[in-house]
Image (cartoon, rainbow, N blue to C red):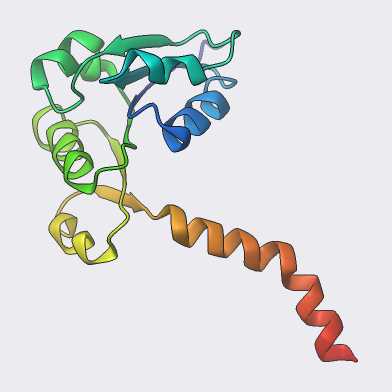
Length: 146
């Protein structure tokens, strides 16, 4: 029997987006660590959430080290602030060499700041538009067939 190493995922930002990711990913075979400045933000976690909650600044390299970033395979900067996400993602990628780094961006023009790095932007507005397109695709087909 082969043993599969449990992935460590760190999410900075316990807003709706970050918590949505944490809830989904925590059902997989993962070690989930969620970091946020606000203790109230952790109240969004379900009672069955088995991950770790770290109160503090997700751009603090020492806090990230203590939280276990050196073992992380995935890092997601998911706060509502593009600048915080850019800084947190750069720390994860450039200092701690996390293999997969994602960051939430609201302003698409800031993508140029990460072009030469191994970071993947997530645009919630684009995801929402894509999902709307997917959900209404059959409606478009029905109208064009009429």
